[in-house]
Amino acid sequence: MAESLSILVIDDNPIRASIIEAGLREAGHSSVQVISDIEDVAKRIGEIAPDVVIIDLENPNRDVLEHFFALSRIIKRPIAMFVDKSDPAEIEAAVDAGVSAYVVDGLRKDRIKPILDMAIVRFRAYSRLQNELDAARTELQGRKVIDKAKGILMKSRGMSEDDAYALLRSTAMNQNRKIVEIAQALITASELLGP
Amino acid sequence: MGLTQIVAGYVPLLDSAVLLATQEFGFAESEGIELRLVKETSWANIRDRVAIGHFDVAHMLGPMPISANLGLTPLAVPVIAPMALGLGGAAITVSNAVWAAMVDAGAPGDGAPGPSGAALRQVVLARAKAGEERLRFAVVHPESAHNYALRYWLAASGIDPDRDVEIVIVPPPFQPDALAAKRTDGYCVGEPFGSVAVERGIGRIVTTKGHVWQMSPDKVLGMRTQWAERFPEQLAALLRAAVRAARWCEDPANHEALAAMLAREDRLGTDADILMRAIGGRMQFEPGVEQALPDFFVPYSRAANFPWISHALWFYSQMVRWGHVEHTIENVAKARASYRPDLYRNALAGMGMPVPGASSKIEGDLGEAMAVGAQGGRLILGPDGFFDGQKFDPDQLDAYIAAQRQ
Image (cartoon, rainbow over all chains, first blue to last red; front, top):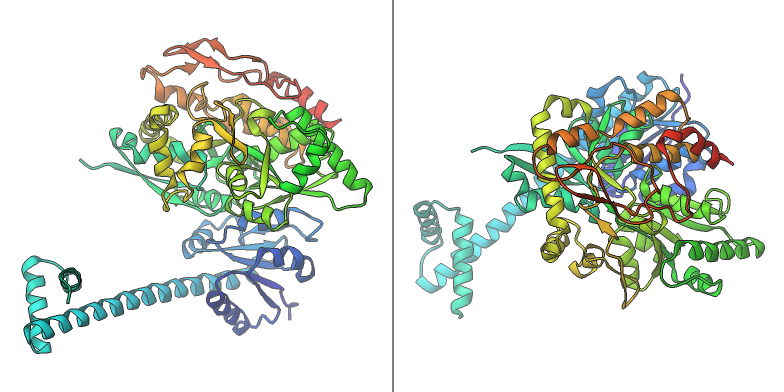
Protein backbone atom coordinates (compact mmCIF):
# COMPACT_ATOMS: atom_id res chain seq x y z
CA MET A 1 0.00 0.00 0.00
CA ALA A 2 1.49 3.29 -1.08
CA GLU A 3 1.73 5.97 1.56
CA SER A 4 -1.17 8.36 1.42
CA LEU A 5 -0.91 11.67 -0.42
CA SER A 6 -1.34 15.05 1.18
CA ILE A 7 -3.77 17.03 -0.94
CA LEU A 8 -4.50 20.75 -0.65
CA VAL A 9 -7.63 22.20 -2.24
CA ILE A 10 -7.65 26.00 -2.64
CA ASP A 11 -11.09 27.31 -3.50
CA ASP A 12 -13.07 30.22 -2.10
CA ASN A 13 -16.29 28.61 -3.26
CA PRO A 14 -17.23 26.47 -0.23
CA ILE A 15 -19.81 24.34 -2.06
CA ARG A 16 -17.46 23.39 -4.86
CA ALA A 17 -14.62 22.82 -2.42
CA SER A 18 -16.73 20.41 -0.40
CA ILE A 19 -17.73 18.52 -3.56
CA ILE A 20 -14.06 18.06 -4.43
CA GLU A 21 -13.15 17.15 -0.88
CA ALA A 22 -15.90 14.54 -0.74
CA GLY A 23 -14.69 13.04 -4.02
CA LEU A 24 -11.16 12.79 -2.70
CA ARG A 25 -12.28 11.14 0.52
CA GLU A 26 -14.48 8.68 -1.38
CA ALA A 27 -11.40 7.76 -3.41
CA GLY A 28 -9.65 6.90 -0.16
CA HIS A 29 -7.59 10.02 0.39
CA SER A 30 -7.72 10.85 4.06
CA SER A 31 -5.25 13.71 4.13
CA VAL A 32 -7.20 16.51 2.44
CA GLN A 33 -7.08 20.18 3.46
CA VAL A 34 -9.36 22.87 2.08
CA ILE A 35 -8.24 26.50 2.32
CA SER A 36 -10.07 29.51 0.88
CA ASP A 37 -7.81 32.39 1.87
CA ILE A 38 -4.40 32.76 0.21
CA GLU A 39 -3.01 34.28 3.42
CA ASP A 40 -3.76 30.99 5.17
CA VAL A 41 -2.06 29.12 2.35
CA ALA A 42 1.07 31.18 2.95
CA LYS A 43 0.99 30.40 6.66
CA ARG A 44 0.15 26.73 6.44
CA ILE A 45 1.65 25.37 3.22
CA GLY A 46 4.91 24.44 4.95
CA GLU A 47 3.11 22.43 7.60
CA ILE A 48 0.67 20.80 5.13
CA ALA A 49 3.53 19.92 2.74
CA PRO A 50 1.13 19.01 -0.05
CA ASP A 51 1.92 16.44 -2.70
CA VAL A 52 -0.91 17.73 -4.84
CA VAL A 53 -2.51 21.18 -4.93
CA ILE A 54 -5.83 21.77 -6.68
CA ILE A 55 -6.95 25.34 -7.39
CA ASP A 56 -9.79 26.81 -9.42
CA LEU A 57 -8.84 28.96 -12.41
CA GLU A 58 -11.04 31.88 -11.38
CA ASN A 59 -8.81 32.33 -8.39
CA PRO A 60 -6.68 35.46 -8.93
CA ASN A 61 -4.10 34.04 -6.55
CA ARG A 62 -2.64 31.49 -8.94
CA ASP A 63 0.40 33.72 -9.53
CA VAL A 64 0.86 34.05 -5.78
CA LEU A 65 0.64 30.30 -5.33
CA GLU A 66 3.14 29.59 -8.07
CA HIS A 67 5.53 32.00 -6.41
CA PHE A 68 5.20 30.07 -3.12
CA PHE A 69 6.14 26.95 -5.02
CA ALA A 70 9.16 28.68 -6.51
CA LEU A 71 10.43 29.52 -3.04
CA SER A 72 12.19 26.36 -2.05
CA ARG A 73 12.29 27.36 1.60
CA ILE A 74 8.53 26.95 1.83
CA ILE A 75 8.30 23.61 0.09
CA LYS A 76 10.94 20.93 0.27
CA ARG A 77 10.28 19.44 -3.13
CA PRO A 78 9.67 21.42 -6.29
CA ILE A 79 6.11 21.51 -7.54
CA ALA A 80 5.28 21.39 -11.21
CA MET A 81 1.99 22.15 -12.78
CA PHE A 82 -0.28 19.34 -13.92
CA VAL A 83 0.49 15.68 -14.11
CA ASP A 84 2.61 15.45 -17.16
CA LYS A 85 3.70 18.02 -19.70
CA SER A 86 3.43 15.36 -22.39
CA ASP A 87 -0.31 15.00 -21.89
CA PRO A 88 -1.79 18.16 -23.42
CA ALA A 89 -5.28 16.64 -23.72
CA GLU A 90 -5.45 16.16 -19.96
CA ILE A 91 -4.25 19.70 -19.37
CA GLU A 92 -6.77 21.08 -21.82
CA ALA A 93 -9.56 19.12 -20.17
CA ALA A 94 -8.57 20.57 -16.81
CA VAL A 95 -8.42 24.17 -18.04
CA ASP A 96 -11.74 23.68 -19.85
CA ALA A 97 -13.26 22.49 -16.61
CA GLY A 98 -11.78 25.51 -14.80
CA VAL A 99 -9.30 23.72 -12.58
CA SER A 100 -5.56 23.56 -12.30
CA ALA A 101 -3.38 21.15 -10.39
CA TYR A 102 0.16 21.24 -9.10
CA VAL A 103 2.07 18.12 -8.24
CA VAL A 104 5.36 17.55 -6.44
CA ASP A 105 8.20 16.40 -8.58
CA GLY A 106 8.74 12.68 -8.89
CA LEU A 107 5.21 11.52 -8.08
CA ARG A 108 4.14 8.71 -10.34
CA LYS A 109 1.68 9.67 -13.03
CA ASP A 110 -0.65 6.76 -12.24
CA ARG A 111 -1.08 8.06 -8.70
CA ILE A 112 -2.02 11.57 -9.78
CA LYS A 113 -4.15 11.01 -12.84
CA PRO A 114 -7.18 9.62 -10.99
CA ILE A 115 -7.13 12.65 -8.69
CA LEU A 116 -7.05 15.12 -11.55
CA ASP A 117 -9.68 13.13 -13.48
CA MET A 118 -11.95 13.24 -10.47
CA ALA A 119 -11.37 16.99 -10.02
CA ILE A 120 -12.19 17.61 -13.68
CA VAL A 121 -15.41 15.58 -13.48
CA ARG A 122 -16.51 17.31 -10.29
CA PHE A 123 -15.66 20.79 -11.54
CA ARG A 124 -17.71 20.11 -14.65
CA ALA A 125 -20.57 18.76 -12.58
CA TYR A 126 -20.45 21.84 -10.41
CA SER A 127 -20.59 24.21 -13.42
CA ARG A 128 -23.52 22.24 -14.80
CA LEU A 129 -25.26 22.49 -11.45
CA GLN A 130 -24.55 26.20 -11.35
CA ASN A 131 -25.94 26.68 -14.87
CA GLU A 132 -29.06 24.69 -14.00
CA LEU A 133 -29.49 26.74 -10.86
CA ASP A 134 -29.17 29.97 -12.84
CA ALA A 135 -31.66 28.67 -15.40
CA ALA A 136 -34.08 27.67 -12.65
CA ARG A 137 -33.73 31.09 -11.05
CA THR A 138 -34.47 32.80 -14.36
CA GLU A 139 -37.41 30.48 -14.91
CA LEU A 140 -38.81 31.20 -11.47
CA GLN A 141 -38.35 34.91 -12.01
CA GLY A 142 -40.21 34.59 -15.34
CA ARG A 143 -43.07 32.74 -13.75
CA LYS A 144 -43.45 35.46 -11.11
CA VAL A 145 -43.57 38.14 -13.81
CA ILE A 146 -46.23 36.24 -15.75
CA ASP A 147 -48.29 35.68 -12.60
CA LYS A 148 -48.18 39.38 -11.82
CA ALA A 149 -49.22 40.30 -15.37
CA LYS A 150 -52.09 37.81 -15.22
CA GLY A 151 -53.19 39.40 -11.96
CA ILE A 152 -53.27 42.85 -13.57
CA LEU A 153 -55.39 41.59 -16.48
CA MET A 154 -57.75 39.71 -14.15
CA LYS A 155 -58.26 42.78 -12.03
CA SER A 156 -58.47 45.46 -14.69
CA ARG A 157 -60.41 43.52 -17.32
CA GLY A 158 -62.27 41.04 -15.14
CA MET A 159 -60.77 38.07 -16.96
CA SER A 160 -60.36 34.54 -15.68
CA GLU A 161 -56.82 33.34 -15.05
CA ASP A 162 -56.92 31.07 -18.09
CA ASP A 163 -58.15 33.86 -20.36
CA ALA A 164 -55.51 36.24 -19.04
CA TYR A 165 -52.81 33.71 -19.82
CA ALA A 166 -54.30 33.01 -23.27
CA LEU A 167 -54.26 36.74 -24.05
CA LEU A 168 -50.62 37.07 -23.02
CA ARG A 169 -49.73 34.04 -25.10
CA SER A 170 -51.55 35.13 -28.24
CA THR A 171 -50.09 38.65 -27.97
CA ALA A 172 -46.62 37.17 -27.65
CA MET A 173 -47.19 34.94 -30.66
CA ASN A 174 -48.55 37.79 -32.78
CA GLN A 175 -45.56 39.97 -31.92
CA ASN A 176 -43.10 37.11 -32.16
CA ARG A 177 -41.86 37.74 -28.64
CA LYS A 178 -41.59 35.76 -25.42
CA ILE A 179 -44.54 35.66 -23.03
CA VAL A 180 -42.33 36.92 -20.23
CA GLU A 181 -41.41 39.99 -22.31
CA ILE A 182 -45.06 40.81 -22.95
CA ALA A 183 -45.80 40.28 -19.27
CA GLN A 184 -42.97 42.59 -18.26
CA ALA A 185 -44.16 45.25 -20.75
CA LEU A 186 -47.66 45.02 -19.29
CA ILE A 187 -46.36 45.41 -15.74
CA THR A 188 -44.25 48.41 -16.71
CA ALA A 189 -47.16 50.03 -18.54
CA SER A 190 -49.48 49.41 -15.63
CA GLU A 191 -46.97 50.94 -13.21
CA LEU A 192 -46.58 53.98 -15.47
CA LEU A 193 -50.34 54.46 -15.74
CA GLY A 194 -50.70 54.13 -11.98
CA PRO A 195 -53.47 52.64 -9.88
CA MET B 1 -19.20 40.14 -44.89
CA GLY B 2 -17.91 37.90 -42.17
CA LEU B 3 -15.12 39.03 -39.91
CA THR B 4 -12.29 36.73 -38.89
CA GLN B 5 -12.52 36.10 -35.18
CA ILE B 6 -9.39 36.31 -33.04
CA VAL B 7 -9.68 35.50 -29.35
CA ALA B 8 -7.61 37.82 -27.15
CA GLY B 9 -7.04 37.48 -23.41
CA TYR B 10 -6.22 40.45 -21.20
CA VAL B 11 -5.75 41.37 -17.56
CA PRO B 12 -7.70 44.52 -16.59
CA LEU B 13 -4.86 47.05 -16.39
CA LEU B 14 -4.28 50.40 -18.06
CA ASP B 15 -1.84 48.97 -20.56
CA SER B 16 -4.44 46.62 -21.99
CA ALA B 17 -5.78 49.88 -23.49
CA VAL B 18 -4.28 49.40 -26.94
CA LEU B 19 -5.65 45.88 -27.28
CA LEU B 20 -9.11 46.86 -26.01
CA ALA B 21 -9.23 49.99 -28.19
CA THR B 22 -8.34 47.89 -31.23
CA GLN B 23 -11.73 46.22 -30.93
CA GLU B 24 -13.81 48.90 -29.20
CA PHE B 25 -13.08 51.75 -31.60
CA GLY B 26 -13.37 49.91 -34.91
CA PHE B 27 -9.71 49.34 -35.81
CA ALA B 28 -10.05 45.57 -35.84
CA GLU B 29 -13.17 45.69 -37.96
CA SER B 30 -11.54 47.90 -40.58
CA GLU B 31 -8.96 45.12 -41.00
CA GLY B 32 -11.64 42.44 -41.28
CA ILE B 33 -11.12 41.18 -37.75
CA GLU B 34 -13.35 40.75 -34.76
CA LEU B 35 -11.39 40.56 -31.52
CA ARG B 36 -13.20 38.54 -28.90
CA LEU B 37 -11.81 40.05 -25.69
CA VAL B 38 -11.69 37.80 -22.66
CA LYS B 39 -10.89 39.27 -19.24
CA GLU B 40 -8.62 37.12 -17.09
CA THR B 41 -7.89 37.05 -13.38
CA SER B 42 -4.24 35.94 -13.36
CA TRP B 43 -1.14 35.89 -15.53
CA ALA B 44 -1.01 32.14 -14.98
CA ASN B 45 -4.38 31.84 -16.72
CA ILE B 46 -3.21 34.01 -19.62
CA ARG B 47 -0.12 31.82 -19.96
CA ASP B 48 -2.04 28.53 -19.83
CA ARG B 49 -4.89 29.63 -22.08
CA VAL B 50 -2.48 30.87 -24.73
CA ALA B 51 -0.47 27.64 -24.44
CA ILE B 52 -3.46 25.34 -24.96
CA GLY B 53 -5.04 27.53 -27.62
CA HIS B 54 -8.03 29.03 -25.81
CA PHE B 55 -6.58 32.42 -26.70
CA ASP B 56 -5.02 33.19 -30.06
CA VAL B 57 -3.24 36.25 -28.69
CA ALA B 58 -2.96 37.99 -25.32
CA HIS B 59 -1.90 41.05 -23.35
CA MET B 60 1.24 39.66 -21.67
CA LEU B 61 3.98 40.70 -19.30
CA GLY B 62 7.05 41.60 -21.38
CA PRO B 63 9.23 38.77 -20.01
CA MET B 64 6.46 36.17 -20.43
CA PRO B 65 7.31 34.97 -23.97
CA ILE B 66 10.94 34.70 -22.87
CA SER B 67 9.95 32.61 -19.83
CA ALA B 68 7.91 30.32 -22.07
CA ASN B 69 10.78 29.80 -24.50
CA LEU B 70 13.29 29.24 -21.69
CA GLY B 71 11.17 26.45 -20.26
CA LEU B 72 10.19 28.29 -17.07
CA THR B 73 6.49 27.69 -17.74
CA PRO B 74 4.58 24.45 -17.20
CA LEU B 75 3.78 23.87 -20.86
CA ALA B 76 6.63 23.84 -23.34
CA VAL B 77 4.83 25.89 -25.99
CA PRO B 78 6.90 28.48 -27.91
CA VAL B 79 5.53 32.02 -27.61
CA ILE B 80 6.54 35.22 -29.43
CA ALA B 81 5.95 38.94 -29.07
CA PRO B 82 5.69 40.70 -32.44
CA MET B 83 4.47 43.95 -30.83
CA ALA B 84 4.79 45.91 -27.61
CA LEU B 85 1.75 47.55 -25.99
CA GLY B 86 3.40 50.75 -24.77
CA LEU B 87 6.18 52.18 -22.61
CA GLY B 88 6.17 53.22 -18.95
CA GLY B 89 2.81 52.78 -17.26
CA ALA B 90 3.79 51.66 -13.74
CA ALA B 91 4.47 53.41 -10.45
CA ILE B 92 6.15 52.52 -7.16
CA THR B 93 3.85 53.23 -4.22
CA VAL B 94 4.57 53.01 -0.47
CA SER B 95 2.35 53.13 2.59
CA ASN B 96 1.83 56.46 4.35
CA ALA B 97 3.95 55.24 7.26
CA VAL B 98 6.90 54.37 5.04
CA TRP B 99 6.50 57.65 3.18
CA ALA B 100 6.57 59.62 6.44
CA ALA B 101 9.81 57.87 7.39
CA MET B 102 11.22 58.53 3.92
CA VAL B 103 10.41 62.24 4.20
CA ASP B 104 12.26 62.37 7.50
CA ALA B 105 15.18 60.77 5.67
CA GLY B 106 15.10 63.51 3.02
CA ALA B 107 12.93 62.01 0.25
CA PRO B 108 11.94 64.63 -2.32
CA GLY B 109 8.33 64.96 -3.37
CA ASP B 110 8.91 64.94 -7.12
CA GLY B 111 9.68 61.27 -7.65
CA ALA B 112 13.41 61.72 -8.30
CA PRO B 113 14.54 58.08 -8.09
CA GLY B 114 18.10 58.68 -6.81
CA PRO B 115 17.28 60.75 -3.70
CA SER B 116 14.07 58.71 -3.11
CA GLY B 117 16.11 55.50 -3.18
CA ALA B 118 18.70 57.00 -0.83
CA ALA B 119 15.93 57.97 1.61
CA LEU B 120 14.41 54.51 1.43
CA ARG B 121 17.84 53.04 2.17
CA GLN B 122 18.01 55.12 5.36
CA VAL B 123 14.61 53.78 6.37
CA VAL B 124 15.62 50.20 5.62
CA LEU B 125 18.87 50.56 7.60
CA ALA B 126 17.12 52.19 10.56
CA ARG B 127 14.57 49.39 10.69
CA ALA B 128 17.30 46.74 10.61
CA LYS B 129 19.16 48.55 13.40
CA ALA B 130 16.01 48.72 15.52
CA GLY B 131 15.41 45.02 14.92
CA GLU B 132 12.16 45.69 13.09
CA GLU B 133 10.80 43.48 10.36
CA ARG B 134 12.02 43.99 6.82
CA LEU B 135 9.82 46.09 4.56
CA ARG B 136 7.66 43.98 2.32
CA PHE B 137 7.12 45.07 -1.28
CA ALA B 138 4.75 43.45 -3.74
CA VAL B 139 4.78 42.94 -7.50
CA VAL B 140 2.30 41.06 -9.65
CA HIS B 141 4.63 38.41 -11.02
CA PRO B 142 8.29 37.46 -10.51
CA GLU B 143 9.00 37.66 -14.24
CA SER B 144 7.62 41.14 -14.86
CA ALA B 145 8.88 44.56 -15.86
CA HIS B 146 7.66 45.74 -12.43
CA ASN B 147 9.70 43.25 -10.42
CA TYR B 148 12.80 44.04 -12.47
CA ALA B 149 12.30 47.83 -12.26
CA LEU B 150 11.71 47.68 -8.50
CA ARG B 151 14.76 45.46 -7.98
CA TYR B 152 16.89 47.65 -10.25
CA TRP B 153 15.94 50.75 -8.29
CA LEU B 154 16.51 49.08 -4.92
CA ALA B 155 19.84 47.52 -5.90
CA ALA B 156 21.15 50.75 -7.45
CA SER B 157 20.13 52.53 -4.24
CA GLY B 158 22.19 50.14 -2.13
CA ILE B 159 19.29 48.00 -0.96
CA ASP B 160 19.55 44.26 -1.56
CA PRO B 161 16.11 43.26 -2.89
CA ASP B 162 16.40 39.74 -1.44
CA ARG B 163 18.14 40.37 1.89
CA ASP B 164 17.23 43.91 2.96
CA VAL B 165 13.57 43.80 1.98
CA GLU B 166 11.10 41.11 1.02
CA ILE B 167 9.34 40.98 -2.35
CA VAL B 168 6.08 39.06 -2.55
CA ILE B 169 3.45 38.47 -5.23
CA VAL B 170 -0.03 40.03 -4.99
CA PRO B 171 -2.60 40.12 -7.84
CA PRO B 172 -3.02 43.68 -9.22
CA PRO B 173 -6.55 44.43 -7.97
CA PHE B 174 -5.65 43.26 -4.44
CA GLN B 175 -2.59 45.51 -4.15
CA PRO B 176 -4.32 48.52 -2.53
CA ASP B 177 -6.15 46.28 -0.03
CA ALA B 178 -2.95 44.49 0.92
CA LEU B 179 -1.27 47.87 1.49
CA ALA B 180 -4.22 49.17 3.51
CA ALA B 181 -4.22 46.00 5.63
CA LYS B 182 -0.46 46.45 6.25
CA ARG B 183 0.27 43.07 4.70
CA THR B 184 2.62 44.95 2.39
CA ASP B 185 4.55 48.24 2.75
CA GLY B 186 4.70 49.14 -0.91
CA TYR B 187 4.37 47.90 -4.47
CA CYS B 188 5.42 48.39 -8.05
CA VAL B 189 2.41 47.77 -10.26
CA GLY B 190 0.86 49.00 -13.49
CA GLU B 191 -1.80 51.68 -13.35
CA PRO B 192 -4.45 52.28 -12.16
CA PHE B 193 -3.37 50.65 -8.90
CA GLY B 194 -0.80 53.26 -7.84
CA SER B 195 -3.37 56.02 -8.33
CA VAL B 196 -6.03 53.94 -6.59
CA ALA B 197 -3.88 53.86 -3.42
CA VAL B 198 -3.34 57.64 -3.63
CA GLU B 199 -7.06 58.25 -4.16
CA ARG B 200 -7.94 56.05 -1.18
CA GLY B 201 -5.43 57.93 0.96
CA ILE B 202 -3.58 54.74 1.89
CA GLY B 203 -0.32 55.29 0.03
CA ARG B 204 2.00 57.66 -1.75
CA ILE B 205 3.66 57.22 -5.14
CA VAL B 206 7.40 57.65 -4.57
CA THR B 207 8.62 57.23 -8.11
CA THR B 208 7.67 55.55 -11.39
CA LYS B 209 9.08 52.84 -13.61
CA GLY B 210 9.73 55.58 -16.15
CA HIS B 211 11.85 57.46 -13.61
CA VAL B 212 13.96 54.36 -12.97
CA TRP B 213 14.31 53.64 -16.67
CA GLN B 214 12.88 56.19 -19.10
CA MET B 215 10.73 54.77 -21.92
CA SER B 216 11.02 51.33 -20.39
CA PRO B 217 9.16 48.37 -21.88
CA ASP B 218 6.27 46.70 -20.09
CA LYS B 219 3.49 44.62 -21.70
CA VAL B 220 3.53 42.96 -25.10
CA LEU B 221 1.10 41.33 -27.46
CA GLY B 222 2.04 37.65 -27.19
CA MET B 223 0.96 34.53 -29.04
CA ARG B 224 1.96 30.98 -29.83
CA THR B 225 4.68 30.88 -32.50
CA GLN B 226 2.58 28.23 -34.19
CA TRP B 227 -0.44 30.55 -34.46
CA ALA B 228 1.68 33.33 -35.94
CA GLU B 229 3.15 30.96 -38.50
CA ARG B 230 -0.17 29.42 -39.41
CA PHE B 231 -2.07 32.70 -39.82
CA PRO B 232 0.48 35.25 -41.07
CA GLU B 233 -2.14 37.42 -42.72
CA GLN B 234 -4.40 37.56 -39.70
CA LEU B 235 -1.35 38.46 -37.64
CA ALA B 236 -0.33 41.27 -40.00
CA ALA B 237 -3.90 42.60 -40.06
CA LEU B 238 -4.09 42.48 -36.26
CA LEU B 239 -0.76 44.32 -35.89
CA ARG B 240 -1.87 47.04 -38.32
CA ALA B 241 -5.15 47.46 -36.48
CA ALA B 242 -3.46 47.51 -33.07
CA VAL B 243 -0.81 50.05 -34.07
CA ARG B 244 -3.50 52.35 -35.46
CA ALA B 245 -5.41 51.89 -32.23
CA ALA B 246 -2.24 52.76 -30.30
CA ARG B 247 -1.88 56.00 -32.28
CA TRP B 248 -5.52 56.80 -31.52
CA CYS B 249 -4.99 56.08 -27.81
CA GLU B 250 -2.11 58.56 -27.62
CA ASP B 251 -4.02 61.45 -29.24
CA PRO B 252 -5.20 63.76 -26.42
CA ALA B 253 -8.45 64.33 -28.33
CA ASN B 254 -9.37 60.70 -27.62
CA HIS B 255 -8.22 60.43 -24.01
CA GLU B 256 -11.66 60.94 -22.50
CA ALA B 257 -13.31 58.41 -24.79
CA LEU B 258 -10.53 55.94 -23.99
CA ALA B 259 -10.88 56.51 -20.24
CA ALA B 260 -14.66 56.11 -20.44
CA MET B 261 -14.32 52.79 -22.29
CA LEU B 262 -11.70 51.45 -19.87
CA ALA B 263 -13.77 52.59 -16.89
CA ARG B 264 -16.66 50.30 -17.84
CA GLU B 265 -17.50 47.55 -15.39
CA ASP B 266 -16.83 44.86 -18.01
CA ARG B 267 -13.37 46.30 -18.69
CA LEU B 268 -11.24 47.76 -15.85
CA GLY B 269 -14.11 48.89 -13.64
CA THR B 270 -12.12 51.89 -12.34
CA ASP B 271 -13.23 55.54 -12.24
CA ALA B 272 -12.43 57.38 -15.48
CA ASP B 273 -11.02 60.27 -13.43
CA ILE B 274 -8.41 58.00 -11.89
CA LEU B 275 -7.54 56.46 -15.26
CA MET B 276 -7.15 59.93 -16.77
CA ARG B 277 -4.21 60.67 -14.47
CA ALA B 278 -2.02 58.12 -16.24
CA ILE B 279 -3.60 58.51 -19.69
CA GLY B 280 -3.30 62.30 -19.65
CA GLY B 281 0.16 62.33 -18.02
CA ARG B 282 -1.10 64.22 -14.96
CA MET B 283 -0.26 61.88 -12.13
CA GLN B 284 -0.95 62.62 -8.50
CA PHE B 285 1.76 61.26 -6.21
CA GLU B 286 -0.34 62.48 -3.29
CA PRO B 287 -3.99 63.52 -3.33
CA GLY B 288 -4.70 66.78 -5.12
CA VAL B 289 -1.13 67.56 -6.20
CA GLU B 290 -0.72 67.16 -9.93
CA GLN B 291 2.60 66.09 -11.34
CA ALA B 292 3.01 66.71 -15.08
CA LEU B 293 4.48 63.49 -16.50
CA PRO B 294 3.65 63.53 -20.21
CA ASP B 295 5.67 60.35 -20.77
CA PHE B 296 4.19 58.39 -17.89
CA PHE B 297 2.43 56.02 -20.29
CA VAL B 298 3.38 56.12 -23.96
CA PRO B 299 1.13 53.89 -26.04
CA TYR B 300 2.41 54.76 -29.52
CA SER B 301 5.14 57.34 -30.17
CA ARG B 302 8.90 56.79 -29.59
CA ALA B 303 8.48 53.40 -31.30
CA ALA B 304 6.44 52.27 -28.27
CA ASN B 305 4.98 49.34 -30.19
CA PHE B 306 8.27 48.10 -31.60
CA PRO B 307 9.46 44.85 -29.97
CA TRP B 308 13.11 45.75 -29.50
CA ILE B 309 15.48 42.80 -29.25
CA SER B 310 17.42 44.92 -26.75
CA HIS B 311 14.31 45.01 -24.52
CA ALA B 312 14.02 41.21 -24.67
CA LEU B 313 17.71 40.85 -23.83
CA TRP B 314 17.50 43.34 -20.96
CA PHE B 315 14.64 41.34 -19.45
CA TYR B 316 16.77 38.24 -19.95
CA SER B 317 19.74 39.90 -18.20
CA GLN B 318 17.50 40.57 -15.18
CA MET B 319 16.14 37.02 -15.20
CA VAL B 320 19.76 35.90 -14.91
CA ARG B 321 20.57 38.58 -12.33
CA TRP B 322 17.82 37.50 -9.96
CA GLY B 323 18.34 33.80 -10.42
CA HIS B 324 15.32 32.97 -12.56
CA VAL B 325 17.44 31.38 -15.25
CA GLU B 326 21.01 30.36 -15.98
CA HIS B 327 23.10 32.37 -18.41
CA THR B 328 24.01 30.20 -21.39
CA ILE B 329 24.50 30.82 -25.10
CA GLU B 330 21.41 28.74 -25.88
CA ASN B 331 19.28 30.75 -23.47
CA VAL B 332 20.45 34.03 -24.98
CA ALA B 333 19.44 32.77 -28.42
CA LYS B 334 15.99 31.76 -27.13
CA ALA B 335 15.46 35.10 -25.41
CA ARG B 336 16.54 36.98 -28.51
CA ALA B 337 14.14 35.00 -30.73
CA SER B 338 11.21 35.70 -28.39
CA TYR B 339 10.69 39.23 -29.71
CA ARG B 340 9.97 39.50 -33.41
CA PRO B 341 10.62 42.97 -34.86
CA ASP B 342 10.73 41.35 -38.31
CA LEU B 343 7.05 40.45 -38.12
CA TYR B 344 6.18 43.95 -36.90
CA ARG B 345 8.16 45.53 -39.72
CA ASN B 346 6.56 43.30 -42.37
CA ALA B 347 3.06 44.05 -41.15
CA LEU B 348 3.57 47.81 -41.14
CA ALA B 349 5.40 48.11 -44.45
CA GLY B 350 3.79 50.70 -46.71
CA MET B 351 1.40 52.07 -44.08
CA GLY B 352 3.22 55.36 -43.74
CA MET B 353 3.95 54.67 -40.09
CA PRO B 354 7.57 55.00 -38.99
CA VAL B 355 9.35 51.79 -38.06
CA PRO B 356 12.92 51.72 -36.70
CA GLY B 357 15.54 50.51 -39.15
CA ALA B 358 17.51 48.73 -36.41
CA SER B 359 16.12 45.87 -34.27
CA SER B 360 18.25 46.58 -31.25
CA LYS B 361 19.65 49.67 -29.56
CA ILE B 362 21.93 50.58 -26.70
CA GLU B 363 19.48 51.17 -23.86
CA GLY B 364 20.28 54.22 -21.79
CA ASP B 365 22.24 55.86 -24.59
CA LEU B 366 19.79 58.68 -25.32
CA GLY B 367 19.91 61.42 -22.71
CA GLU B 368 17.37 63.36 -24.74
CA ALA B 369 14.75 62.60 -27.37
CA MET B 370 16.41 62.17 -30.75
CA ALA B 371 15.33 61.69 -34.38
CA VAL B 372 16.65 58.42 -35.81
CA GLY B 373 16.64 56.58 -39.12
CA ALA B 374 13.30 54.95 -39.78
CA GLN B 375 11.34 53.37 -42.57
CA GLY B 376 8.11 55.12 -43.46
CA GLY B 377 8.58 58.48 -41.79
CA ARG B 378 10.33 60.47 -39.10
CA LEU B 379 10.84 58.75 -35.79
CA ILE B 380 11.78 60.22 -32.44
CA LEU B 381 13.24 57.90 -29.84
CA GLY B 382 14.12 58.31 -26.18
CA PRO B 383 15.14 59.62 -23.79
CA ASP B 384 15.82 56.10 -22.56
CA GLY B 385 18.22 56.60 -19.64
CA PHE B 386 18.54 54.45 -16.53
CA PHE B 387 18.48 56.66 -13.43
CA ASP B 388 21.93 55.50 -12.29
CA GLY B 389 23.52 56.43 -15.62
CA GLN B 390 24.27 52.82 -16.61
CA LYS B 391 23.87 51.65 -20.18
CA PHE B 392 22.81 48.32 -21.55
CA ASP B 393 24.59 47.39 -24.76
CA PRO B 394 23.04 44.12 -25.98
CA ASP B 395 26.29 43.34 -27.80
CA GLN B 396 28.05 43.42 -24.40
CA LEU B 397 25.53 41.18 -22.65
CA ASP B 398 28.12 39.02 -20.90
CA ALA B 399 29.90 42.05 -19.47
CA TYR B 400 26.59 43.58 -18.28
CA ILE B 401 25.58 40.37 -16.55
CA ALA B 402 29.04 39.97 -15.02
CA ALA B 403 29.02 43.57 -13.73
CA GLN B 404 25.63 43.05 -12.07
CA ARG B 405 26.87 39.88 -10.35
CA GLN B 406 29.27 41.90 -8.17
